[in-house]
Image 1 (cartoon, rainbow, N blue to C red):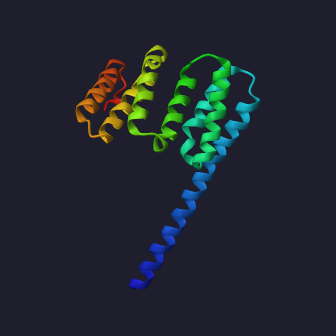
Image 2: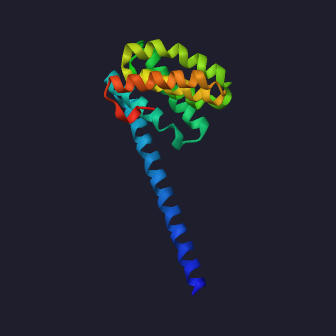
Image 3: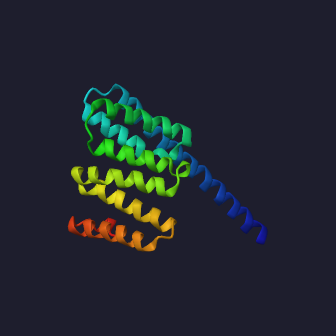
Length: 167
């Protein structure tokens, strides 16, 4: 009786693993389709949006591949010369991708440089940066600073009726 219980558990685990792997491949494929579309898209606004979506999916790929995808999107956005929300978020994704290669304080400094641009674009860009700064101060055990930035993010979310992002 106990042996059959273990066999069923093992089969269940194998099926879940296979299903998860297929789901991951489907997400990677969606991103690759977006990449193909971004490379051929003529409308600059749609193209930058596609690159932002590709950057958002950076965690489905190895670090080097993610770096290449984000850098391609950033190169397009820089060539375009307009700092819109898509360029802004790609820059943020690039910073997040390189957290392990920078000190936490370097990441905070870069995020603080991005903060004024986030205010110009829309509240969400600013919100993401405030939360990331707060998280980084938590890593440094600077809890007063962390609470300060999380409070700013919460107030911004409340002011914009964004209940999902209230810290």
